Length: 352
Image (cartoon, rainbow, N blue to C red; front, side):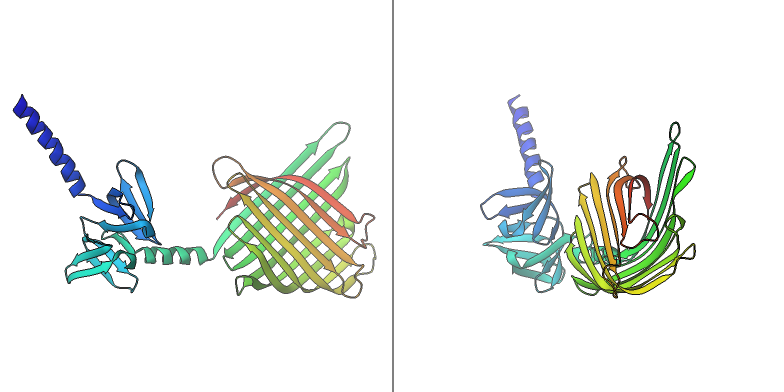
């Protein structure tokens, strides 16, 4: 029994020794020795996969040295790249044994390392950057429907469509929308609108834009309204979770009215604010404001404001619901009311 126990203990010891021998090792400056498999060194971080703590990310500046059993690619700060096992020789020194000879270097000079079966992280980063900068089409369609029967009969239908060709620094957008409302058999809204815009940024903050919109609204006695604008854009906030863009330019507005009302046309100024905010995956906010005064008479102007909260439905990214309010104010309308306010809940489907 004593001999069997001794052989068993020896076998366990050999297995443990073999495990540590055939593992990569990271030694930190405070003397800790971590074993596992080094999968990547990139951007000042050593990625170590272990059986006891899962995947670890260790700051390279806290590491004194590392050893690998299998050959790996190692790129130094100078750009020199070699492939071979890495061995620590003490005092922050490393030795790389390649087919072309032995290279001795310092731990601080290692800028990247990856498996011989893997891919250069610089190539991966370049591909991800090119993918992020590539223009992509995004589409969104929405519908809101309301019906009521009884003491009051009401019907409301709203349709909206957007198509955007977008990259981090420019965006081509098309939109179209239709609104119809009836109350007790009388139409209270019958509006159709569409437009196109393009915006491009030539630096982190500065860019330019051009836009045009067409609108028809018989309820407001508008046979055709054309609004055009062009000018400079300024990115005040440009983050993944939040953006804020201010626009300022000049434009031209033409309005043809029904019922023998005299048509209007004038040069205009063109001001706008566009804001988005995303709170994790729970909801996002979208706010747009445009202010278009006449150059000849600042008392003649039009303001359009639209704010909404967009909430995802389910686990996917396609279905969402938007709840918001839209205000349209015309300082000198042909219709009796200057302000139109619409509260809506809109079902949205988005796709690429």
